[in-house]
Amino acid sequence: MGIKANLESVKSTFLNPDCLLVAVSKTKPIEDLREAYDAGIRDFGENKVQEIQEKQALLPSDVRWHMIGHLQSNKVKYIAPFVHLIHGVDSFKLLQEINKQGKKINRVIPCLLQVHIAEEETKFGFDKAELEEMLNSTEFQELTHVQIAGLMGMATFTENHDQVRKEFRGLKQLFEELKTRTLPGFVQLKEISMGMSGDYLIAQEEGSTMVRIGSAIFGSRNVG
Image (tube, rainbow, N blue to C red; front, side, top):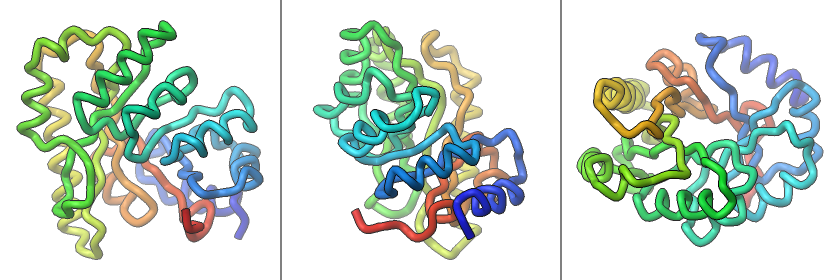
């Protein structure tokens, strides 16, 4: 099946039609992205700064670029002018750098806080104690050029659906708990980015508002 047919097939299984589909286009050639764009996709997810820069220059200006990979502080400046949403903010140091770069160009940059929900050590993200410490800090209150739009989490890579569901459910509970708190005005919790090609239906059942799907749309991932 082609990309358009794959997209239609994926969308037809969605339990929540309002859940945003971010097409994970990392390592894919620009022709594939254009095909997805022609099929109606406007949200593309990349995990490498150089690649997102190159592709952003080649696709129409109405594309919304999502930085979904681990982002190094020294690379923020390259995507600050155009990135639609940074999914993987996993440290206060990174958030401060995003704020700094946003200030330089007078742009508020939307972000998601990545929470470590998996049992794997390989995943990035805040644990709950680190998140609490940051949210309660004076330095956090003083940020001016970021918007915290919600949370992001990656479940353990496992066939055990109960475990995946438990991890997603934990992130949703944290999200709901944070929404009851008095937080600075730039924290507007609306999005939960969780779920990928293998577990997006469980994620939708557990309240995901945004899923990141690559291989189910573009086919198996190229190495890179």
